[in-house]
Amino acid sequence: MKVFIRLFAYVRPYKGWVALAVAMLAAGVAFDLLAPWLLKQAIDKGIAEKSLAVVIFYTLMLGLGQLLKTGVSYVQGYAQELVGQNVIFDLRQKLYGHLQRLSFSYYDKAQTGQLMSRMTGDIEAVKNFTGFGLMFLITGFLTFAGTFVVMLAMQWKVTLISMVTIPLILVSLRQFNRKVGPAWGDIREQMGKLTTTLQENISGIRVVKAFAQEKKEKAKFDERNETNFQSNLSRAKLEAGAFPLMGFYGGVVFLLMNWVGGLYVIREEMSIGTLMAFQWYAWGIIWPLNMLGWLVNITQQAAKAAPRVFEILDTPLAVDSPPGGGIRPAGLTGAVRFERVSFHYPAASDEEKRDVLKHLSLEVQPGEAVAVLGGTGSGKSTLIQLLARFYDVTEGQLLIDGRNVKEYNLEELRRKIAIVPQETFLFSASIRDNIAFGCPDASREQVEWAARQAQIHDFILTMPDGYETIVGERGVGLSGGQRQRVALARAILMDPPILVLDEATASVDTATESAIHDALHAVMKGRTTFIVAQRLSSIQRADRIIVLENGTIAEQGTHKELYEKDGFFRRLFRLQQGTPEREADAAELKAAAGEGR
Ligand SMILES: Nc1ncnc2c1ncn2[C@@H]1O[C@H](COP(=O)(O)OP(=O)(O)OP(=O)(O)O)[C@@H](O)[C@H]1O
Image (cartoon, rainbow, N blue to C red; front, side, top):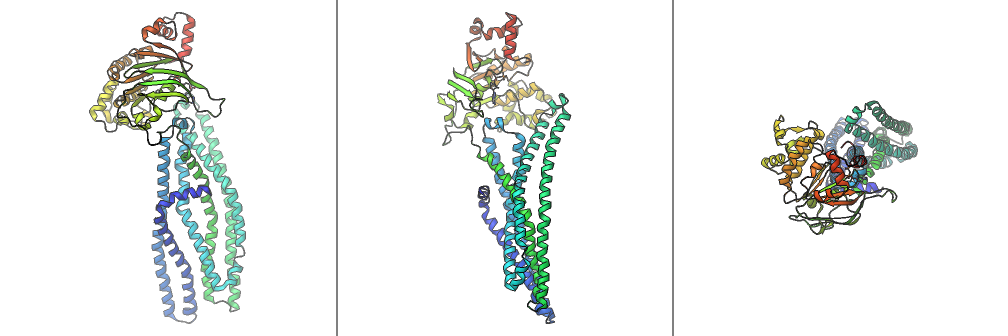
């Protein structure tokens, strides 16, 4: 019930349209109640009395009423669809807006397919209820109640006797309702799983094909499809069992009406016109009853779908701007301080919590270029993700320009930090739009300038439509290195006080990397830069190097200082120069740096 009360909050802004639809619907029902009475008058006062004028009068009234009914039905249909569509529009907008704001920790666990399914199928189920489902409920109720009262007033005994089967219909309906609810719950959940399987397969199709796992993947999909099929079949069986039975009870109403009504006409306790009118009224009783099963279906679908949608809306934002919106800095100098920062990723239980960063302290001056080195899994990416509050520190504090990052307006803070992530994502749009993603108003010259800095301008000019070339979904059509350079240009264009390069040149060849770093040298001037890298060639321009080991800073200093220490950096240096001091060092470093990088 709670879920419907919450849904009505979305209907409330359209109460004017709801009122119009209900008024039209009431007018339609009024005509439905009047029409059989007009027929009765035509028979009893016209045909029985052999008055053609009376017959013509009532027939014309019937025709006029029918015409009016067509008009009001049109307005009602439009108004009800408008309400349904508006509700779905608002809900989808709100859901999408919330999805945009949800934190990284949410997406770490969320399944894309489930989200897609909620944004489409579940919302559609909600719309069906708030649109014609709700209107049908009102129409059905008004028609049934109105017809019943009019029939009682015309001939109460015949009315009551013919409706003895109605309690049986209600019993069947209750049983159906009890069973079909869980069935719809299963179907909605399975639809989410099916979409997830489909989405994962399509996203990972290259891996599937490379490992020749098409058959296994197909079997996985078939299994989910089969489960979905079976659930729908079980639901259909429930419907097939309940609907005809309810239809039968409804038919009995009609039968009894004719039988008992016929007896009353023979005994002259009821006119033939009333019997004919009853025949018509019978539909006003039968159709709402017959449609009740369908209404239960729509309601149960919405009852199962709406909580799936609300669950997303109710997910709190793990990371958000402070109350009041937070500080909106006009500019930042880029001074960064980690003060005894510890961090663990959200985990289901305390036992699973593992500190990825441990009491880490680091002070970076404005304009300083800091390289972050360390073995795979040592916490490098985590460290820089904390900067832009992709996650919040779990202990200690992180300050930018002397203020805790949590005091800033989140959007503004992120605008001041440009990140070139390890994995580049390009949108299905032109290269220009991809580069200008963070600054949609950038001029052509600015975009080209950024592309030049990232050493991608010349390549873009060789593409069929230059900067207007559409790079397909996920940037298909560009090599890994080219994609990385587009992402680099995207970050450079933002002109941020803090620039973060997370393995940003890992996919480019050494010559291009060197060219990018030469260009970056100019770009980095006046900005605080963090360079996460495994290759020493990537960090030549860094003022300082920090080496992470198990979430703590194991070494830090300049190239020279670190080389002079007999630590990770020196061993890495020798390994990459091809002169490891000991075989053991080489093995250790290979393991630490991650094979195959
Ligand atoms: N989203 C996440 N949820 C849970 N644990 C995570 C998540 N991301 C990373 N980790 C864990 O945190 C640790 C540090 O990961 P991080 O990505 O910071 O390492 P890294 O030093 O950047 O490694 P690499 O050089 O391989 O990219 C790893 O043990 C990893 O398993």
